[in-house]
Image (cartoon, rainbow, N blue to C red; front, side, top):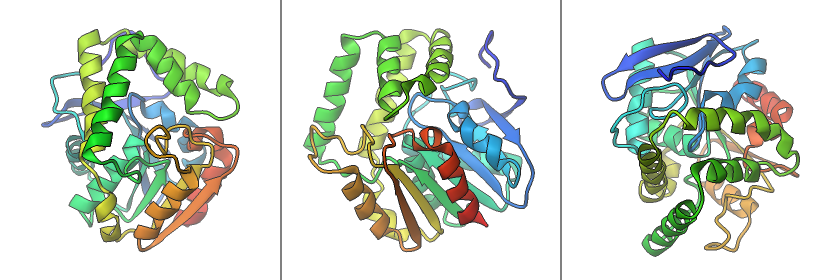
Length: 286
């Protein structure tokens, strides 16, 4: 666990073979359990606006992925399939049933990978601005990762993180302030080289562990929510298209899916339009 930093919720931890201690928030009760998976360089509280409301009807568990939040740091083989393995281990350790996987951004790609590798592990999927719907050629993937590495080289981790979070919101960047302050405080607990290695490995995983060509194999009912003003999807320097096009094409490949595009909303759709997203999730699961 990270010393000197606390969440405004009671947290628990479980020790897993693949990742050491995993921190999580466990709120609410209900017949269904929603397991929330955060995105790149984020934390369990990235779902705070959602589990605070949804815990009235569901058991809500928000996890800190290895190397993030209050979970253990280590020389882990970060990537989409690795995180998926951790999620499966976590589910088995807590003996979770009647399970819904909810993923944001990279967490969405992790959730997709998990149900593709383990078709019976969850009853449904909730994907908020999921990574994995945008397709990159090998050349595009190399260019994308190189551009991010160059930006990080000339910028501090704090500046990179702040810019990334602020860009995730379309309208009110003030909403991001608490999150930024928390993540910078957590960042100070990392050795810089370890943090950069994790970020680079996660980005490599998103680019080189694709799911798009397997989306048609998802058997679970799937709720997909995108903000139409998403600044990250698509990567417009490489793909001069729209979020709507990426979202529509991806959703069309998933047999039992419903897509909602929220106007005037950015990448952090479940935070920026939490009330709307919470209603969509509740209606979808009921």
